[in-house]
Length: 211
Image 1 (cartoon, rainbow, N blue to C red):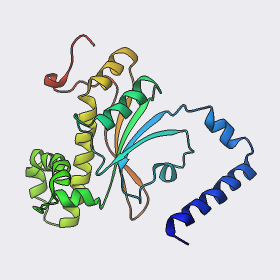
Image 2: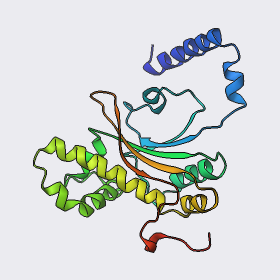
Image 3: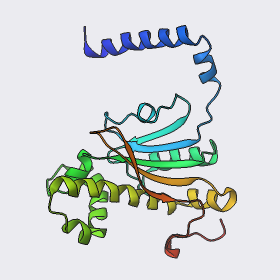
């Protein structure tokens, strides 16, 4: 049996178990999606948003990419954000990184990862440049990576606040609140590291008029 075929078998077993426990489970999901949260997380397979938060399908709208970045030219991310904020009316947007992130570790090196990944990781290198003074004081390599994970989450939350999507929703509906979290692979605990309430003022350079 091929490895992917095992996934299909496991899927059938999972679906059968769900129906056995709750015969209306899939019918209910098919006709309802009212998540309160948008989760912007890392693509790392060890950080499944539903499992680590104890939520059910339909409760969290999810976008994932390498190192949970919010980039102002990423149409994929922005389309998810637009849909979540303006159509699903989410109340909270969570950027969740995780300690031990491979993308964060890679950004601290001078390794050439070829064009596309180099372009992506440069966004994290910008975070390093902004916070270089603090990071240079940390001599332990693992501690430096962990702190960069936290600082990266903080900057991605700030990037959310810089978008007209968020600012317009803040002005008109006083939502969503923005949260920066970090998940611990070693203990399974989520640590809140940064938060912005709806309507928070940022540098006026990034604020839009007449939204």
